Length: 292
Length: 235
Image 1: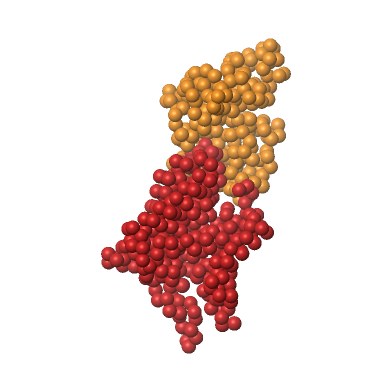
Image 2: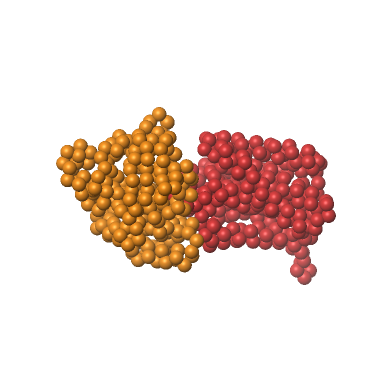
């Protein structure tokens, strides 16, 4: 029983990270119908930039903001400079392009920041909290991870559902042509969508770096798990992505805890294959009428 | 005034419009008639910027607009109600309507325009918070037209508004549009398959045939020309 609680709490924290990754992938998928395979590498790069700031004496929170702002900027630049010119090309071209961005960033990072494994600080203690004499395997940093992912998601939800800007962004994602006839500057909306998605990814990168350690490919696995979560929820559904990401976090934690951590990746693969076979459009597919 | 001069549009090697010229006077309804494939939809898509002309120009009050992006043309006050699927099915009825006027600066006027739309299109009011995907074909068409009017356009491009609409409802909508034409100087370009009903409400009419202007005159006079009616309009 005690073990189950430990694994559940552990799964919750990791699930929050995968949910963020999944949400980032879904936001870009909805905006431009591209699976952004560079999402992990972009988050890796912005986390390195945060570390760069830390090493030059910046306080943690400044570095945290640096990561998020650089994420915003990197997403916008990738969309504007690289994705936009191949927008009307066959979808496969854009996918290959994001793979290219992944390779370039993972090659660039060791050149700029060194290839060795680095540690990355956490904002709060990573030692489990105590309630009276009871030790809970849940640290203040876990709480912060959960809270900040949740907080960013609530902000995005409010932006998309409650503001005119969010309405424009959703319209542009659903139907670019009709949106343009309504005077919406679709290009700007897509750039903004990529920027916000990339910021969500950057948050995941900074939050997971203390436990995974920082090296050029440290986000690859997180991307795979986030992608699995996104598929689980249905690529078109942001709430689905969050639920899917959390589910992957729990599932992998149980697989790792009960069957050995070597099997975590296999576990993700099994889930991915199972979902694609049983509900290829994801568990939340009823929310969208759109053919993919 | 909307002026089209020497417009030629091609999709690859296929010429859709050839040397088309017409002027659509301020505060009037101009019907564009013709068979399927005559180039009617291409004409409105070119005016709203979705299609780039090969040569020729489109001018709104003497300003060249044929090289502008569709979103900038919309912001000049040209509202295009596309044929069929113009509604964003994933969004609610109210969100669709709000989108119509979002580019306009004055929020109080945007709210007023929204209220007017619900008043005129009563069936939409009861469903404002439902996804547009739950609407019937006719209601979607209604929503599409209502959304265009929320923008308080100077020029309204209507592509087959009768599609899926019951005659009585269409009559009400057209009566409202006529009112806007008379009271506020709205300029309307109306594309219709159904020539008879279009000619009955239009002031001017242009007949397109295979991408060229076959005839242009006062609507009333065109309706009286028997030979033309037989050749192009099928009644």
